[in-house]
Image (cartoon, rainbow, N blue to C red):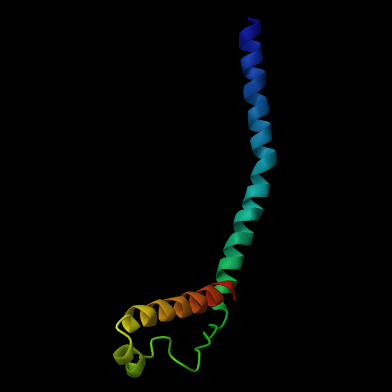
Length: 90
């Protein structure tokens, strides 16, 4: 008999907790939806493009140095990483 009473009391307490916590989650969901709508309604930000392209090829450095292509690709890859990293941060 005591186990049945304890189960009913625990069930009732769970229901009360659920009722107390439910408005909090409703407010949180409403705030999240409002933030999403505001973000979608905001004007789009323009991405700044560097004045020089990252993949410029210098033919003289390639012709004079047999390893020129490898060093050129490596330099351009590092430039691209820096540009992407700065775009992600800002």
